[in-house]
Image (cartoon, rainbow, N blue to C red; front, side, top):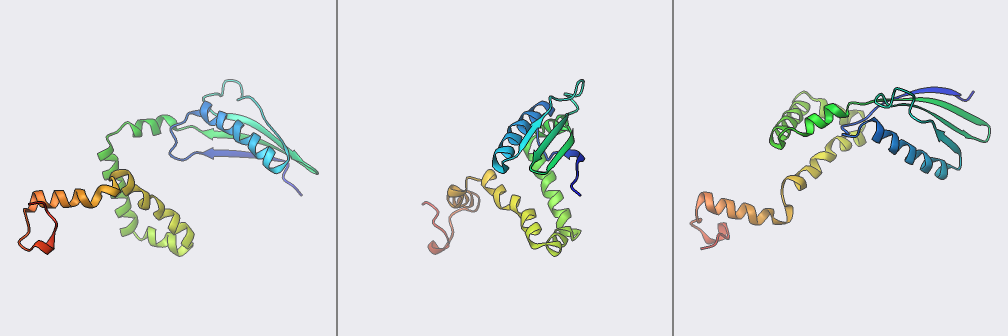
Length: 164
C-alpha cells in the first residue's frame, strides 16, 4: 500500500540561509519537480507563528496516489553564519585538524570500505580546496620566487631557474 501521509524532518547542511529563504527555495523547486514528473504538487504557506521554525505542508498527487507531507526544517542558519564570520585561517586550521583525525582514526578508510563512491565523495572537497587557497596557474612561479628568495640562488644552474 502506498504511503499517504508522512512527516519529513530536514536538517540542512552547512547552509547560511534562514527558514524564509529555505521556504522560497522549496517552493521554487517543488514547481520544477511537478513539471519534471508531470504531477500536481502544492505547498502551503509557512504555518502560522512558525516562519522562524520552518514548517509547512506539501501535497503531491498523480494517477492513483496522493501524499500529504508535513515538512519541518531544522533551522541552524544563525550558528552557520556565526561560524562563517570567524577568521579563515582559524577555519582552515580546524578543518585540517578534523581531516587528520578522520585519517588517523581510520574513519576515512571505513568510508571507502563501506562504498568506494562514498569515499570519493569524502575526498571531493580535498580536490577543490587548493584551487580556493592558491592561484593554481601561477603556483609554480610563486613557489620558484619564494624558494629563490628564501634559499638564495642554487649552486648548480640546472637545479632551479631563479633569476640572476
